[in-house]
Amino acid sequence: MKKINYKMMCLCFKKCLIILVLYFITINTNAQQQDTSRFSINPKFGFFFLTEDIQGYVIGTEFNFFLKNNFLFSFDFYRHKEFFLSPSPGEYYYQLGVMFGKTLSDKFVEVQYQAGIAPFWGLDRTTFIKPGMFGGSYDSEQFITLGLVTKLSFKIVPLRFLSVGLDLQSNINKKKVAFIPLFSIGIGHLRDKK
Image (cartoon, rainbow, N blue to C red; front, side):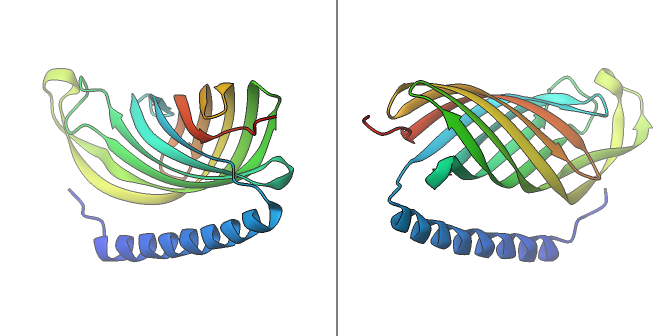
């Protein structure tokens, strides 16, 4: 099994976190100037489908900040895990995304569209070793790559602080291309009292 350079990966994530913190400080300053305070935390669950005929489940969380003129900034973290009846070892992936887009809404229905970037890393099966149950055994390696993410969301907002919806997300990168439908529950300040 090939090992990834964890020192380099940690440095990359530290830089990403510093950029996120600086960006949130900027957004917070802009939000105060624009007199907006809408936000949401969205736990999500769904499935992923890779172009290599690999499927599994996804769990994660997304944080949304609604800005003036219906602009939307969000970041998310997902864990992708291959279904348990798969060749050994089972593949798994992580994704940390930063997206920017717009939201179209009336009082009870909202549509969001966004694009951004997301590091995508995990464990990938490589060379076939021996036959066995559920597809046999493979050698594996860890990888990390940068992907382009897109998302289209359809949400119903029955209460000011709650939404339920469906997200269609993709991560396009040089290692794995993933299509990810997700069920989402939004909790936060989702609409004004109007």
